[in-house]
Image (cartoon, rainbow, N blue to C red; front, side):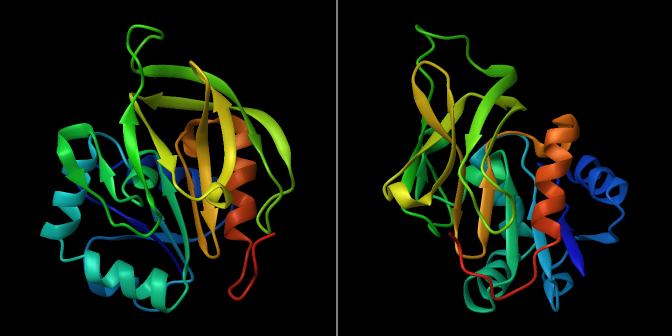
Length: 204
C-alpha cells in the first residue's frame, strides 16, 4: 500500500500521476490513520519548510510519521521540501524540522548564483538498494539546500556554486532535493527503483 501525503503546501497530485504511470496503485494520505499498514510513504514538498511543518501538525501527522518511518521502518521518500524538513533546522523562517537526520538547511548565496535554482542539473547518485550508481539530469526548484552533519547520509550531489547534497538516504529513509516526478525518464526510473523495494533491506 503506497501512501502519498497530501497537504496544502505539497505537490501530491503530480507525484500520484508519476506513481500511477509506473503501474503502481497509490492513494493520498490526508489523516494520520491513512499511514497504518503503508508499505511506502512519499512526502512531496512545495513552498517553505515552516508551511510544510505547520500543515503536518494541523493534520496530526507528525507522530504517525515518526511511528511509521522511525519505529516500523516503513520505506519513505521525501521530495524537495520533503527532504529539507528531515533535518534539524532551516534558515527559511527559522523553522525546526523533524530532526530525523542531523544537519541544517541554508540558503544559496544569491550574489554568486541565481536564486532560486530553477531547471535541470546533473546529479551523481551513489549505489543504493533502490538504484544503481548513476549520473543523470533532474529538475530542481530550490532556494535552500541541506548541510548534513553525517557524510554517510549523502546519497547524491550536484553543483550549484559548489557541491551540495542533492539527495540523502539512511536505512529506510530516502529523499531528493529535486522533483523526481517532474524529471522525465530519469525521475521515473528513480521512483520505480524505490517503489519496487520491500522492507528489511540494508543500505550499501
